[in-house]
Length: 240
Image (cartoon, rainbow, N blue to C red; front, side):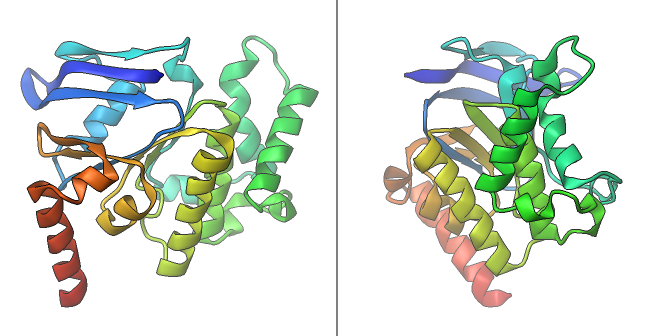
């Protein structure tokens, strides 16, 4: 059953279309990777899914009662986030803000959800540490825990492994995969790492200011677009 449906959607800035021809569905439990070159419209689409941008034409709809405010979101980290002066527990708990309504304090249930998510992500021993004292990989797990506290259904991740070393990156991707496989959480992730995308994701959406491909990862690897993109990534690895 589709939880997010995109029909003939296009997005524009100041009247100039930056991406169009979007037609895809995300089903409950899917792991979708959005790939493409810089400037291809990936972040714009994610803003549309989050309800931060309205389509110029077409529509994006949330099904089965899913609200954009009930989607966990892990944005790209910036320097301000990395130096945030709060404990790990405080950062993770902040993911419960949208669910609190007018209540001024976190409830016992909120704290249990935060505790359980920290345990799932292996960061419970860090709960009293300052967020800014953590390594990059630890910080991303904390922010992933925060995103998890906001949802039971879907996570949107924008380049979650950016700036991490290869070993930490693989561990993080493995954790994200387990959230999809073991907990049934729908994953939508922007990634420049095409090799990881085809290794972990169930579906691929390839953009280049329009939709070049949408379908299963297996089908993507057999297309001309997929083969060209994968070949370019492998060539770049050799060069670097």
